[in-house]
Length: 128
Image (spheres, rainbow, N blue to C red):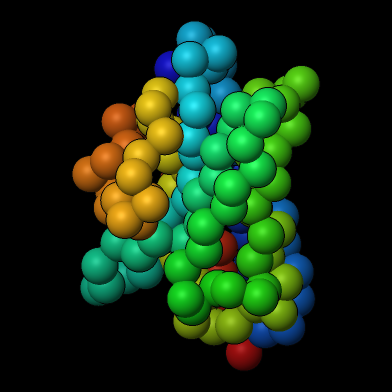
């Protein structure tokens, strides 16, 4: 399974940006995908995740992005999106797309070690 993240860039505070994560190679076995981010000098942080199966629309968000970010999917394109609105300078980070084959327990959704597949990351820079 390969994950290709894209859509990062330089924006101003208050702007919006949409990240995409395209999947290939055995993607039919994936059931759960999400996003983590890591800012310079900081620990990796859970951003959002969701089920990508047809009959499960569950979504999860980190506290710092709730109400501003939305994770969505296009099953026909094997792609997951992260719509980021009202961006803040604190959102500046490299964003990584992640995936796993089996839906994790609710308590483990934000655990980076639960995800076997990682994309290469896309840089989001928010200026003031």
